Amino acid sequence: MPIPFANVGSPIEGERQIALVPTAKRLRVVIQGRTIAESVRASLLLERGRRPTYYFPREDVRTELLEPGSEWTRSERIGDAAFWSLRAGGRRIENALWSYDAPNAEIAAIKGLFAFDPAKVDHWYEEDEEVFGHPRDPYHRVDVRASDRRVRVTFAGETVAETQRALFLFETGHATRYYIPPQDIRFALLEPSMTRTTCPYKGTASYWSLRAGGQTVRDATWSYQDPLPDCPRIKGYLAFYPERVAIEVEGETPTGG
Image 1: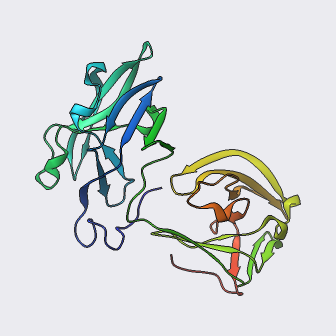
Image 2 (image 1 turned 180 degrees about the horizontal axis):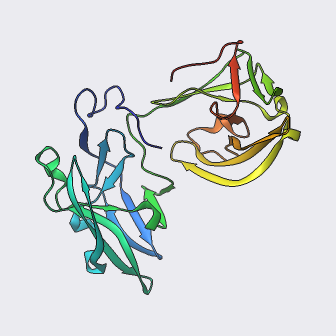
């Protein structure tokens, strides 16, 4: 999910739009069973409105596996990106990574570094732990707090959930999410969905559609059945999209982030 604004303390706060931040983590990229990149000198690109991206020094990438790709893109903030394909596991993976050979002056340090298309990577590792989704922003927080404020979810004139045992999840740059224990939800109104999404801060989410009052809304609610160790409290709780149902907290419609 894109970062809508820079966070407090971030190197891109205020008027600055972009920054390349060194990371002390050991990073590894594995594709087709082969380690394609490994580095303790990588950097994290933070760009306003975009997901963070790791960039690797050329010396820490298996460049002998690379061949010029068939694409290029232009970034107003960085410059022209050239794509590279690679051969691994007996096949060619098209446009698996990219680099900037003549970046804009503001971000000149990115010159010659490689970034990988996350859709073309089989496994990412930070130190010895596999990570999923895009890299985490070190200036991004997720806080979970128990609350006895009454949360009520309605759809098509029916009450879908009501609780005073919700977990309020406060995430930098996003609206508050209200995670409701399953005991306080009318599961008879829900139908499992095949949709899955991955959050680098919370884990992989499962979804349910909602049918009530003769109406159906797809993927109205989600849950982390096996959340990452950093966010264990929301396990099994469900949160609803305020754009798809009506949510009230103490009788009021919540606003803001």
